Structures are given as structure tokens and as C-alpha cells.
Length: 189
Image 1 (cartoon, rainbow, N blue to C red):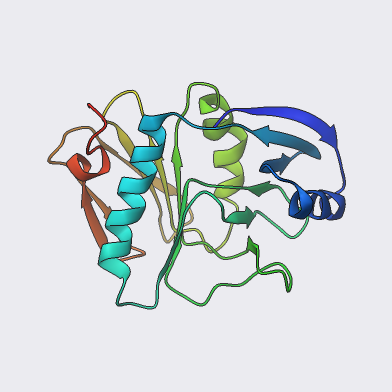
Image 2: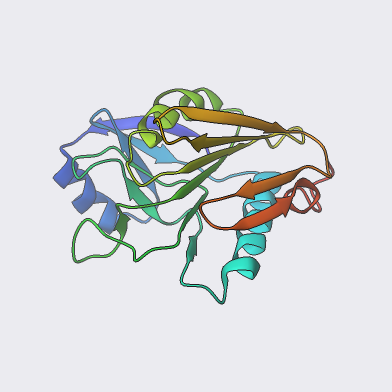
């Protein structure tokens, strides 16, 4: 999803604005970023991955959220909408609105040409600061390639690249395994 800066607001003003807005916006560095629609392939990848995770987690106390779940890096922001969010503990929210998640375990971003630099730069850096995040997954939409980052016990991140249909993305924090052929089903890749 493409983003473009709109205006500068305080974190509290942003949340008030966003809760009334008809379209989604992210908030980083004090700037409000308008989000635009995604391609069919992007949407298929998100639906495929969320669906596969849901099937494996449906009988467990885990939750899968799609791109409408706002995540707070901290109570003061930034605030983002990852493509898929998952956790297997009770969700904690910023306030009584229950619309801004504080404790995701797994975050997934599907790259778009217009957002790749932002996702790989500031957003990825911000995601790594969330204490509860154990895994970050970055999915290409123009080629079969998944980058899987796992937080090690020493705080460093371990990267595993997946690039073949038989390759299996293993999300340890969720106890789930998904073949890349299923992530990219019906995308033409």
C-alpha cells in the first residue's frame, strides 16, 4: 500500500483523527501517512497467509488480524497497519477503544513497489523495538521470496530466506508451518 505524508499531528490527535477517518492512515515521525489500495497479488498473498494461519490456529487461543489492525510501536507512536498480525496470548490494547494493539508476536508485511523502502527502513526498525515481537516476515509480491526474521535470545535477529514453492515458513512463536506454494497460491508466481 502506498503512503504519502499528509500533515503533522501529536499522537493523541492522530488517534482521534484516525478513529473518525473513512480511510486508513499510518503515523510515523509525527507525520500522518495516507494509505492507498493494494494490488490483486498483494491482497491474495495477505489472504492466503492469514487463511493458512487461521486454519492452523483456529482451535488454539491465538489471534490472526488482517491489515485493519493498528499496531502501536509505543503509546506515543508510531502507529502502523501491518498486513498480518498474530499473537498467542491475550491481546493488550492502548486504551478502551480496543483498536490499537500493543503486544503482537508476529508481524507480516507484503512489499509493494511504492512502500518497499519505507517497510525495509523505518518500519522494520520500529517493529524490532516492540518487546513482544518474536518474528517479522517480509513477503515479496513480484517474486516468490519470503524473508523471515526471528529474534534470538540475545536480542539479535536471525534471517532465513525462502524462495522455492517447497520451502516452508516456520513461525515458531505460533507453532505454524506454511509452504510458500500456499502463500503464493493463485498469484501466478
